[in-house]
Image 1 (cartoon, one colour):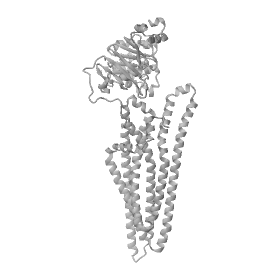
Image 2 (cartoon, rainbow, N blue to C red; image 1 turned 90 degrees about the vertical axis):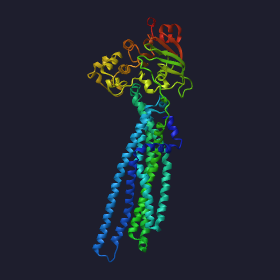
Image 3 (cartoon, rainbow, N blue to C red; image 1 turned 135 degrees about the vertical axis):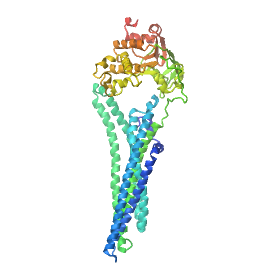
Image 4 (cartoon, rainbow, N blue to C red; image 1 turned 135 degrees about the horizontal axis):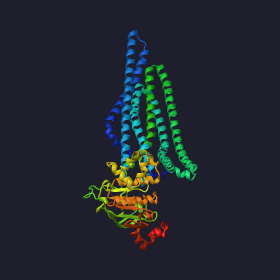
Length: 603
């Protein structure tokens, strides 16, 4: 059950959930005035509810009283008590509306701030943090878990504040009304407490399990939807249906188990309440017959007894909701309390000027992933000069993309240093560092909206001429002009209305519009045909000749004209030089070249 992420497992084997929930109370501070108003209204409502049985007792006794008072005087007294009850009932109703209004507004505000805080925190996660939390888990924490917390703020005010006031107040009023029958209340309270404790002990582990299963369900659904084309291509629809159905049925079984427990709670409460009322009527009728108790007193005592039962019902619901909310609070708090691995320095360095082309230097860089048993990169040293193309090639798993991630500071080096224009990138703010880099990832990620919006994503003030130039260099202008709306053509979610090559060219154009000092291409030409690839590289060398260009590639044809080619093998530099030099000096490079190019193409 704990395979969703490692963080989840820890949450279900410790007792820190309540502490984490208390930690989230700081998000309640801006809404303290609303909380005070809600609690104040709740107190007024409770007082009104406690006064009504006493007024009812007086009314009943007044109606049944037989004495020498004239009929008109008796009617006036009854009318006065009735109007008093009406006023108290209206006051209690108005207070109840106020409680719901203020508590709902407060809970919605807390949930809004929590969602924003989680989203903002995740935005600053490095790849190391993303390795600890699955995407499905983060989505669940930002939606379902925060909804649970919002619900507890709404219900908690009424249950945690109203129920104790009514319970204690009703016990006091009941005992003062009929001290000789107080043992009935004590017996009912003991039975109710035993029932609540039993239900809690059964339900708490199941509530903890639900959140894990929701994560698994989200992850399974996300994987299926993202890989739908592959699933259909291999004819595995039934297998995926079976996999989803297994998780879905497991979640359903746990929910049904909890619902069965909850279904038992209310009939048991009703049984206790009816038994209590029957005992009060039975004993009270004997006392009325003996003249030691009046009818109004028995009815008031009955009302207070019912208030006590309902107070315990509220508290039992709260005790059952609290563990689930505590688990949700723990999951949200773990995101908010996660120490981000990549931080800006307290006193960030700066560049003396913004160069047209940047210089990147790797100096004895080694890197190991947190869960790795060996280095992904070992003793990497090279320099990418402005105006030159530095290419990185090697077999799968040799560390090519890791170099790109280190330049962007998605990870920090384990040892050694990376310098951008003579400044260690760890001494720069992340915003300043990345503002000088135009990055094109392996997987083209475009946002739904106009093409122009996507191309301006790295430079929102870019002019129409700048985005047109970027698209022209990236060889994307032809298919953009073919669209009816041109640069205002709307991309669907995930740019599903474009081909793979078109998405890749737009992704390249987006980096070019930024016109940075360093262009970083992480295997970004793989979806392009050879003709488009050649035209793009030619335009790139002409229109962005001052920028340093680092190209991570699999195809020798893409990088054979580069001024410097770095051959990686098992995280180490196996060769460095031009295409011709490496053919002579690097067996690894020659093997790659011979597997892709004919003898004529190699020279």
